[in-house]
Image (cartoon, rainbow, N blue to C red; front, side, top):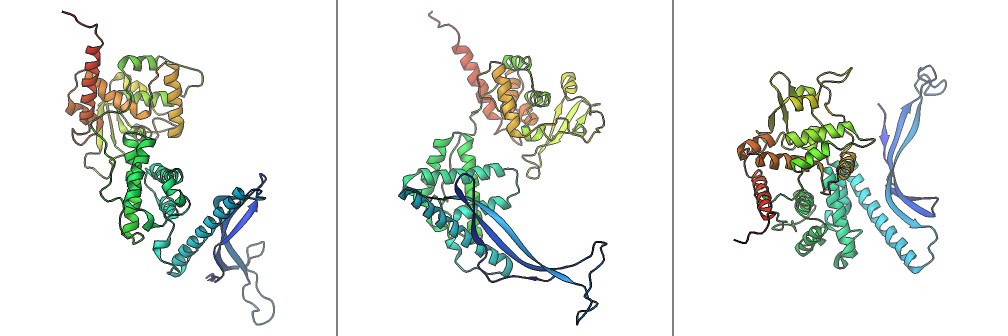
Length: 411
């Protein structure tokens, strides 16, 4: 069995490499020990010692295992001004702090101890490490939460001194209150609330694992009226205009998938995973489990009746594919959004249309056409009527706007 030994030398080491643009890129080099590896000849036979006490035994060679980690931090190679020299000093101090924390984590992983108190960790590094281990589908929101917090520290004069390093005990309730105001200034509706919820998730994890003494976000939240529909919707006329609009280079898979969302109310995360096995052609039904609630709700399954047009839209597996193949071969979510915005712009629709607007448009349009709220809730896969009620309010607003659009009456 290979033997591994570790050195007591400072580990990892902070190093730098010169870039063509005149900067010095900082990185960490980890020494992960040496390993004795058996030596074999070209034919795959073990190489043996020929003489001495080891005669007849297999030869081994020493391999030193190292790993590099880029810090995405850069020094100015030849600072000319006091400002550049101070910037280099600050960056170098930050790099040293990161190196020290990584070293403590390495000690804990390899030997079961640390050299300093957990309260001295850099919360920004701790947050990034949490993201690096995160496996759930909302990881992009987790990354956005860290990015927003870094921006907040950088752009808020009162807290800018923490933009590179902030200890857990330096996060206060007053800071969190200002942070929520900052988030609401950067977005509206569900966005800021979603970001703060992910931020609180990391705080809670740190408290539970004794990396923070108390939760500074306790009692703080961003309130949103869940019954208000904030996204734009497409009217039936706008949908027909959109479907009649074609342009060179359009992606047919995106067109088909978004059309199904408009006519069935599917989320992007569900439509991209649909397979032909989800379609019961004989009974004209589309059945699937919602990714958003799968494993969390007993009512995650959705069944939607299909008509001739929808069955034709779905079609049959391509040549060489079977029932287990995907119905739509879609690019990334970002590429789908870009294509959708280009499509709506070509159709002369000035609304801000995202993929989720298809789901909202479906709900509002069928309510407008007389569907009752329970039917809509069932088609959308809602476990209750609470989340469906916002669509009835949107319909009421549309009706009011229709009445208000009539010429003024002077009896």
